[in-house]
Image (cartoon, rainbow, N blue to C red; front, side):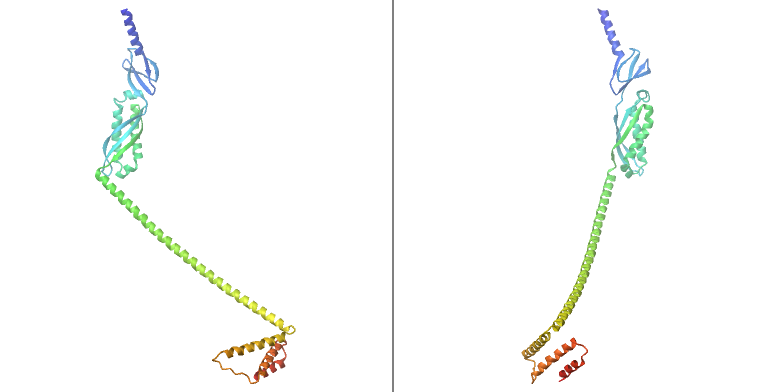
Amino acid sequence: MTVALVLFVIAVIFVVRAIKVVPQQNAWVVERLGKYHATLSPGLNFLVPFVDRVAYKHGLKEIPLDVPSQICITRDNTQLQVDGILYFQVTDPMRASYGSSNYIVAITQLAQTTLRSVIGRLELDKTFEERDIINSQVVQAIDEAALTWGVKVLRYEIKDLTPPKEILHAMQAQITAEREKRALIAASEGRRQEQINIATGEREAFIARSEGAKQAEINKAQGEAAAIVAVADATADAIRKVAAAIREPGGEQAVQLKVAERAVDAFGKVAEDSNTTLVIPANMSEVSGLIASAMKMVAGTRSPGVPGAAQSSAGRLDR
């Protein structure tokens, strides 16, 4: 019974030491008699008990490593406190086990020294503007050295850049002055644009008013010309109609009557004026003679080339 129990215990020990289950995204390094033998992949693996042993266990996931903050001096002799974080991954478990006694410490120290070197080549203002360049240079420098350690550096990110308080106050004053300068420039540009807009508006308004005045004068002149032409046409038409009416039967008698009415009206208007001295012809037959002379002149105009009629009329007018 005792022997059976001992055998059972030995068998259990053999099974435990012979069967190894490696989790996913892990790699175990096996040594045989103190020498590297193999790297166990995820899943079920078998070892030789008391001959093989698992010496190192590595996770293959991406690992974030907080790099301690440090003081770096820039090219213009300004101190900066820099804090960053490094992301790496074990790619070769065998080298990670035997390439360095502690690859995490080695990566941390190398990241700090590389960061100091990169920042030392830059001025203070550039360190804030070129973070991506700093990160890429740090990753490139570390990755070259970490290949022998079986580690792949994926990226480095600067978490914080803290200059001294005096530099912070100076930078704040510079930013304030720059913003005030931009505000003054913007205000002056606004006033300049306002003046340009006002001048442009006044010029366009003056041009519009002058064009309106010009067009008004043109329209007025055209209206007056049209009125003159219309009056002339109407007068000519009236004269033609009067001349045609005179040639009609009884036209001369109508003209005699009209002339007589005008003469009587003229004498009446003169008599109404108290300041006018009216001289009435002693013989009223002179009035009828005046009318007859006018009719003869009308007849002369109707039949030009009759000198007797014109001379007779002139002689009566002289009397």
